[in-house]
Image (tube, rainbow, N blue to C red):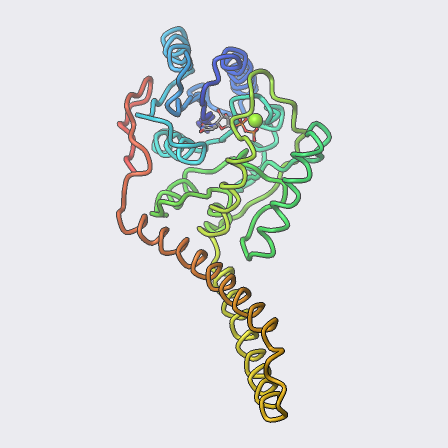
Length: 320
Ligand code: UDP
Ligand code: MG
């Protein structure tokens, strides 16, 4: 079977050389034992890097046929870069594995993923066996992230990031998802098909800095919830209903106060309720606005990325 590794890279010049070397070694090793075809390749997606990333990719591609490259016209973010890569290789491979450029995803797990594929799985999720190598902060925020996603009604594979194998069939199915607000790890479980999990130990970043600062992590989580679930809207409706019930109680209460002649002292409760209601309304409008913003973007049907150049890949790549 022809396996493609898809590696999104954004300003990864420090790690790229090492990543390229190790992944190529892995593919050759697997090809030597006959697990995969010798036609298997590594596809780097340059997500509009500002450093020498694309230059390194070009050099790699001209030095060795095993490498191929996709250059996006500008930075589009990890998820879009990943999709661009997967869609560019889907017609050429039997299965593709997506992994990070920084060697955090242990490439030793590729063997097991390929085995699961051979056993008939269409999707194999790489799941972290522990979070020992994470800093305290990342560990806590990541745990909150998965908990929150669950309570918000998003179906996720726990502790699975974007290290996964997808068969050609699964990739075809993924290409049918036309949404602009991409949250791949929420979408892939929706595809269905037979899937399994492979555990791996996540390493420290090999070199360079994380491209996911706290700000991006928060917006990623927010994106995840609002593009996968309408539970927040429902929660607000429920809240609104209870506030309505409370206000009926308050009405009765104030009428009683009125007829017993104790009206002046009501100032505090009025001020408090004005603030409370005002705040809640703003919150509700904000959340609704968030979804309307999403609808706005979806209706525009903008391409999620534009491919600038392709090396060692025949197809010009889907533009979506
Ligand atoms: N990445 C990307 N575009 C971006 C940000 C990140 O393609 O705008 C890539 C990055 O090069 C890496 C992967 O996404 O291969 C994961 O990023 P990173 O390792 O910085 O995230 P972390 O592991 O810290 O969550
Ligand atoms: Mg990383």
